[in-house]
Image (tube, rainbow, N blue to C red; front, side, top):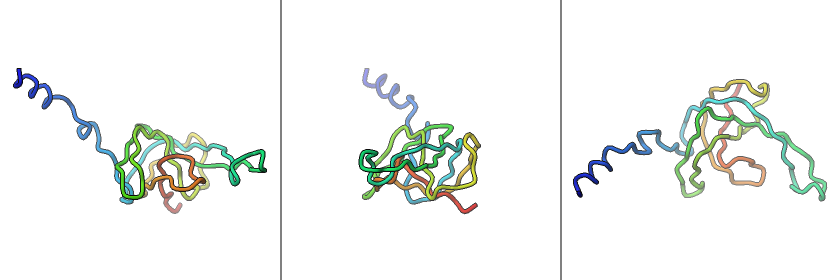
Length: 121
């Protein structure tokens, strides 16, 4: 019985086989479509006079996950990554292939849990 359980465990696909989680602060490549969204800026409450601000994203073709660091939390099933800086000159729905460095949300200005630096165009 133990041998059967061990064999079943070893033959099951692992997360690593399906795709490793990505690390923050190292170069990565992502593919998806360009998207925008409107969110309230400072002071983040429309009753206090907050204005809508456009944020830009890449909606990924396949979800990713990230590994935790001392500064950033791990993230699972990430389907949208925010572009920083804003990556101007793109059209919503346009396919993107980006190479950049991931970092985690760490201010109230960030609208996604994972962000990527947008390479110079």
